[in-house]
Length: 109
Image 1: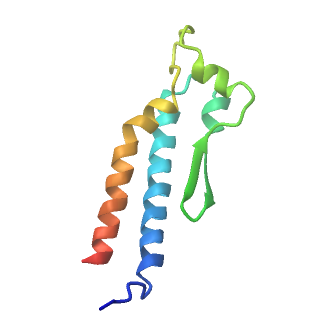
Image 2: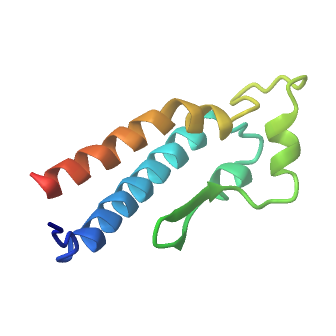
């Protein structure tokens, strides 16, 4: 015996995952803006969250010097620090997975 599974459930699950990704990316961006070095404020204002596809989200900075500042562990900043995007991502990654799982559970219950 076989049962069909897709009566709109797959689309709802995809949407639930996408929602968790966007929400998580926004939270990563907010925390990153708190940690980014703030010499002029331009880098902080450059942080972007962008949906690249249904379940593909990017968060980051596109100023020419953003990567150099992010990776420079030797520089000391009066405000902010290196790894201002990587650290929030690593801190939030498991929460994003858990949020997506909870969203899916609500759909399936």
